[in-house]
Amino acid sequence: MDKKRVDEQEAVPVALPKVDRFGFVKQETNSPDGLTKSRSAREYEREERRIRKWRKMIGVGGSDWRHYLRRKPHVVKRRIRKGIPDCLRGLVWQLISGSRDLLLMNPGVYEQLVIYETSASELDIIRDISRTFPSHVFFQQRHGPGQRSLYNVLKAYSVFDRDVGYVQGMGFVAGLLLLYMSEEDAFWLLVALLKGAVHAPMEGLYLVGLPLVQQYLFQLEQLVREQLPKLGDHFTQEMINPSMYASQWFITVFSYSFPFHLALRIWDVFLSEGVKIVFKVGLALLKYCHDDLVKLPFEKLIHALRNFPDDAMNPDMLLPMAYSIKVSKRLEEMKEDYEKQKGKLSESVKQKQLQPS
Image 1 (tube, rainbow, N blue to C red):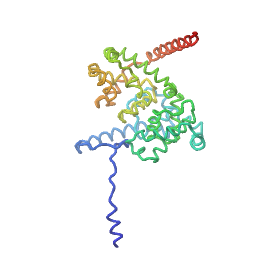
Image 2: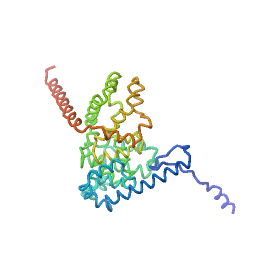
Image 3: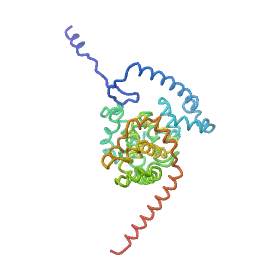
Image 4: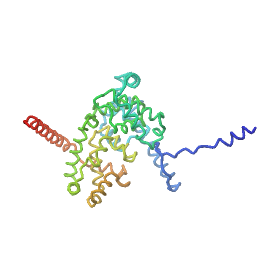
């Protein structure tokens, strides 16, 4: 009898952390209950309508996707830019990235890479696992299911492509994918991105010397000078270059430090339209904050470029501004300029090496 009473006293309910709708632990907010409920009801009804449209568009398991995409590409583009419904995001990401086809063409390959192969990057991956989305419930538990899945995907990729292996920023990309799909699906989407199943390959972001990051930063710097000349001059005066604030934009496609709801909307478009959306969003942010940034000295400028204000992070404001910025033609021209410069530099180095000392 006494034992039962003690057990009853010990069975105190444990307070679980409050999380937002994406699974991140959140701080207490003081918003009025009535306002929150009313806004949520309206949003819920609108979201339900959007989901019905999307389900009709993609069909069961994506069976109608290609047919609809061929018939109405502009409708698909417009709907993706408005945001993919969260409950369908994982499936649609696989469809627009080409990763579903890779998965079907390579049965059993992922399991082979995870179980039977070893990677030179295993210790590096283990060291970095706890740094990936540390405030998300899926990844919080040490050696829990989230961390194990992330380890498996990163290890498998480091074996699949030993030239790339593993680089720290890859954890945020793989982690983001794992929140919307299985390990095997996330792995093949990572392959589709880095190997260029649909758009230009991303692997240069993670190769030794980060060659693609260097190219993108060169292009971004030129675009800032052309489209925001006053800010470009101020950056030159304060000796600010894009590597000081924009490298993570490209390496993690905004998933590292940007609000998650904004990162998801950017990823929707990134998987559909390619890397140009990263340039557009970056330019839109700089444009939105332009009048404040041009007044700041070096240290405050660096801080501002790494910590944009909340009002600048509203996707319904920022993304339409980004879509209005045209970059495709100039990116191609600047890529050619960059490759010419790189070729001249390489030739100059060779000439110096051939000269007698």
